[in-house]
Length: 161
Image (cartoon, rainbow, N blue to C red):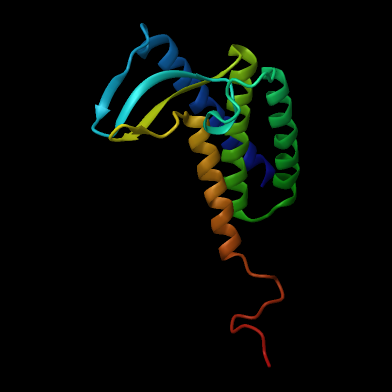
């Protein structure tokens, strides 16, 4: 199962970095806002903070945030190596791939490249990228698994009185 999770992680890392490269080098040359729908734009942003721009502008070295993310990723890989639950393997694969994608971006560029901009009227959700999509999807799968998981000693009919 470890191999399956790592394949998912590497595939999502490739999706993330491929999409960021494409946006930086091909689509956003020059940088601009590209309206796609009445609620979605493509933009080019550089997030120096953590998730959704939190701590942006704080004096935190990019390598420190990457080191923290890589330490958390190591813990997730250990969890991945120990699990046999399919949804957990898939979820952890997406989270690990997304975390590695943003960490590498931060180390290479000093910030995370964001380009997906959803909005309602004048209110814009913080811009994000495919690594963030993978992390969110992976966490959703982990939460779903927690609802579907039953203890090994539980009977189908529940506890007996």
